[in-house]
Length: 365
Length: 211
Image (cartoon, rainbow over all chains, first blue to last red; front, side):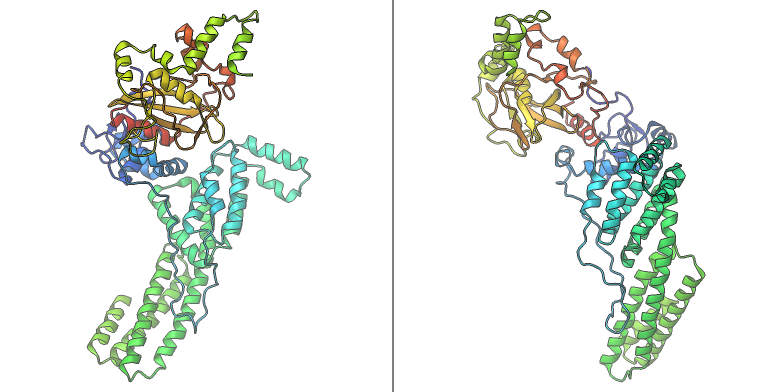
């Protein structure tokens, strides 16, 4: 009987053991595992011929390693699979819980906790708006690579200041991948159109080669990201770093490298700001008469908050800011906080406060 | 001008002749449910006429037409073709469709809009004496008599092989089918590419025994 399914033989790779499978959601004949959970079904779809190329799947089978595919899967296919698992009918057929739209990841507010006597990071709008970018990411249709990139870049520029890091990351990766697929023919055709429109010459160079085009795109992304709030930029690059490491998405590399430079300059700015904040508060602690338990407890709380906040700010930056100034700032700040912890440990006769101070001191070493 | 009037006029053209009775036959096939049921094999006819005509299962649950627990009642395979051929999306698009399988008396059909933009999976229960008067969410009736645009068997080349499949049908049914020229840009295969979500649904149907 002629079936409707596209392939009659091997169609997917087992997400668990890397063996070949004739159907995506059936039990693996090798290990017996059947995908049931959301993430297993997600991986199984990515590991199918509907989402990944045959050579890649063959490689995974040969190496008995589904990770080969999962790490290098095409981003648009991954997005299509993610969107597919939002389909309520599909979830029903697969016995998954009712699909809900994936919410944007929450902003990680890493600004200083004690605000009133310190410089604060720049004020940001409380409302997150990224509906235009989300629409661009979900758009299907007949637009060319150039048109889609233009559209996304324009929307990115207007929404960069308010979009969540998650959506920004998706949009940037989307653009970066598409840059790889633009043809010289399309670029030349755009060049001709620009000349016909008698536009400024300054824009024409960007179309001459795919490399020039990509460079221009990177510049425009960098310009858009100047509007991104520093705290969100930290989130964005933390996630981007993790995403690149887990998927080895080489196509996004040129864009990521350029963005890392932006990130680095913002990160240094953040570190300097945090250092000033900490210096100010350390000075406040050292100059306060710590005679009463209540004042000691308050100062201990402030120091613990400072340390926690510093970790939130400094640790994500660590992987990117391999910079002498950044290292110097980190050393100074840690040293200052350690001195204060030691000071408080000496001052606090109360067992509980003393224990907290010694613990902080040890953690900061 | 309605399709049937066009068919009657065409019989006057030299390149294609249809007799009056053939046009009457097509009209009856499209509109008359009792006549449609006469095309059923005796066993199936007995089963279909043994039940009452309903618009939906009394104990149906889930989204009408999109959930196997709440299939669309229709009168046999011809009823399925007539029902689905009459549907149009909210944006006014009609559907090409084919049966992909069945399980526990519920049939699964896949459908695609003429433009190729949207794909669907419907569930139908063909063991009823008439078609449901209800419509699945997001669909309207196309109005008037709709020419057929789908099949009750399965082809791996759907919908690109539409014309060939029509030609393989019984002569009395062929004229009831929408000509290829009515389909958007013909049957360019590049338009009719199933998205990953649709493939996933077909795969899911296979583990549930439909395919």
